[in-house]
Length: 88
Image 1 (cartoon, helix red, strand yellow):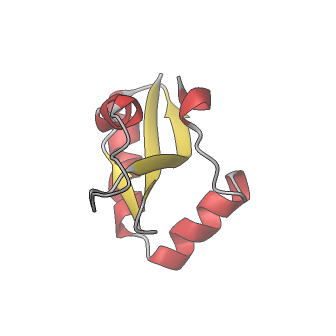
Image 2 (cartoon, rainbow, N blue to C red; image 1 turned 90 degrees about the horizontal axis):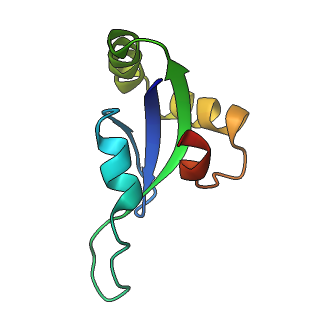
């Protein structure tokens, strides 16, 4: 199982993250509230059988405009909840 995913940063931006980064992002401690360090939430993911499929999908998603990504996220996750526990 290989994932292609979109993450949301604490500053309300979206990014397509490499599949390898998901576990690091998911297990990183949240910064304390006094720092301006962004943190990330997994808001969308797709499961692929092969790594090259996930990489190709991530490359396509990176080229999408913001509105398309938001629509994709909201179809799967309308409340923008953290999906990390579902991905593992």
